[in-house]
Amino acid sequence: MRQSVRSCGALVALLCIASLAGPPFAAADTVSPVMLANVYHAGVVLDDYWVSEKYDGVRGYWDGETLQTRTGATLHPPAWFTAHWPKVPMDGELWAGRGAFDVASVAIRQQPADEAAWRRIRYMVFDLPSHPGPFTERLGALKKVVDGLNVPWVQRVPQYKVANQAALEAQLDRVVRQGGEGLMLHRGASLYREGRSDDLLKLKPYDDAEARVVAHLPGKGKYTGMLGALLVETAQGVRFRLGTGFKDEQRRHPPPIGSLVTYRYRGTTSSGKPRFASFMRVREGT
Image (cartoon, rainbow, N blue to C red; front, side, top):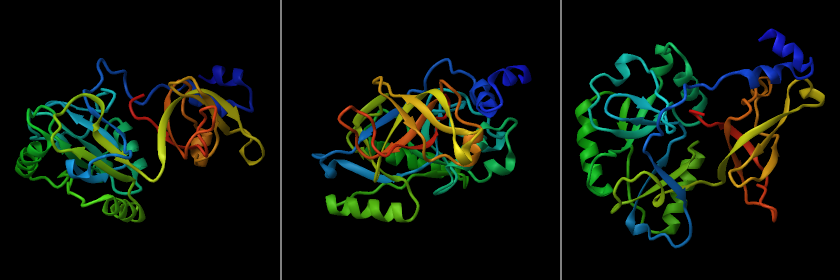
């Protein structure tokens, strides 16, 4: 490791350390069969949907025996965290509270598990993937499962209806003002199915997307010797610099080359590049 770092040169030594580091999880054999959301859009019939807060945490899929990330990597929480959980699959978010994504992210990465860190995490359950009924029916079954567990760190995500678009926007404003990320809308008549569709929608005050890290670009001025920006590439082949949103520690130890990162933005240019792109986080399990 030290010889490899020296070969990178003094200016980018710290950047090289990060690029040589391995992924936070072992590679998964299969991807968790989770339901994924499209972005909320005009024309949605709100009467058809249940609404809930979008929790800014780490997706957790319980397959009946193990807890996994969205990408299928197995997590290793303390034994008490999943003790007596049902043998039926549950889908939810490992959440440490509003504005505390980093707490959850660090906790799930640590091995052996940090007991104190996991005490701060709640498993916010929003679905039962193996239940054959529509979402509205699954909500009743989910209540029985979570209530039957009767442990404070496993909680059922509150679901409610809104009367119209104005009420939806008012609820979004309230959640965001209180430090939340946004809202989720789940079609009541939908069955649980793997993949992305309008059966599940996300509504946030900004857009976000993922891109793969292609290169580390060195910083200048106060960031000399640290990361200046990431050169990233989207799934559509669009490359752009991602230079804002980083903490100093992330500039010292940037996301590894090849990893997927999530960024927020507001619209795109005529060439397809995101406008006002800002780094959010490394995608878990990559």
